[in-house]
Image (tube, rainbow, N blue to C red; front, side, top):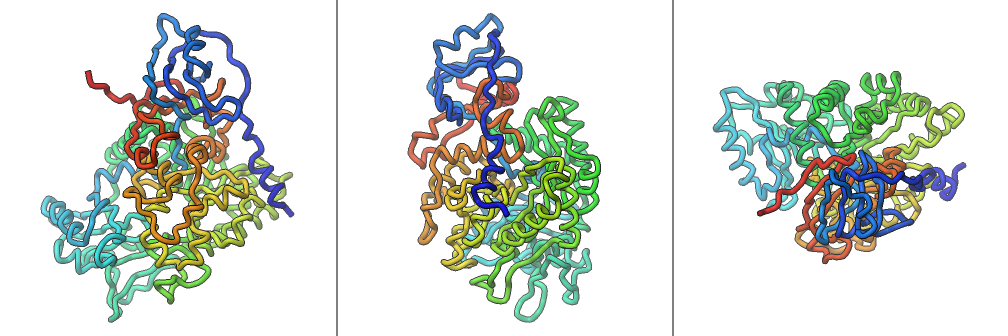
Length: 565
């Protein structure tokens, strides 16, 4: 049996940074005159960086970098700004971020009335019978804090079908026309892993939870190929502007992979993408059969991971809990995946060296995930694995029973977590969970204390997907207004050094990339993010005002803020 110490040793194996030297050469790019936070224990801070090709050739003082400057070297005077390793979002739905621009964007709606006002504008511009879709509403700050209903939508759109998805992506509301188009009636039984909410009289409210959303989604026209291309590129360019140099996309199709490959060949994508494939099912079976594809397009695209789901989201009460919801005693949440298909997929993936990452939010889902992973590790010994230490991941690890926290290190399972969920959920999680379960919710410090690395992400477009919000959330554990609330366990917050690792070195480790990126060291890829202010020193509230001024991917300036003349 693995102990916490032995499991942790397996998990952290390979975290030692690259230490090879680099021959003297004229640099293609030099950044000097600032503060460089390297995230390297060997040289935590520096003043300058020299880049040759796609690699870091020098890290040191402004004076010493001068020998790398030649007639064709581009020199960037930092002027006191800071450089950090290229930021990575370890859980970022790239296409969803881009397609958000095509849909009715309901993020930030402060009331039902505001949602309906935005909806009225979109419906008035729609063709007869055209579907109107939207994304991003959440009832947390509404008075009263209630879900939308089909009656709300019918009052604005009695003729056009409307389908509006909640911010977590795990619940949607349809109007009567949409339900009729999908043949969803009072007599419709919810599918496995889904629910159809009803009022006190047994009538459908229009809210569909988790797998039940597919009943209506199947009738909504797909985006055109041109729209999908545009969505990808909007997501890519937004990411680079914000300072992300890599995003790790949790679950897509092979059609999407081929779209990415074409756009890379056309020179339209500079961002690194670590792409997971949906599973279980035929898409995942194909990845297992053909094996991982690592480092396509000069290290910009990797496909080696299967993304699966065990439960839904806490806000829509789909997260699977050990005990009933405190504010809905009749519900434990939902299991959304057929375990008879899930178990053999795990064993097959382990044999073929395919990483698995699984969505688990509730404490029951997280315990189940750890049990399923442990069973797979016992079923497939190391001698039968292509990758001995598979670095399987728990995506979200949001509510974990205290008894299960140590098991992550014991099993060498990586908790991939999103700091912004803790500031987005703090207004409803206490009512959903009650005070006892909050002790294991968003428990970054408790997990980190066991020694596991915690790669950080945003879950965009569920959250905004902005790195400074993620960094702030990790160190402040407050919402963007500075509010925390009682019993929100400030002791779970992280130091700034740990928060920086959440967005740099630990995502690199979770993607088997720690020898190539994640810290600023000689020989590693020149992935760099330049920020306008020193987030390691400034007051907490100032972090949210900090912006990206330059993004460098593989030595290439992929984004640069325009300076006023």
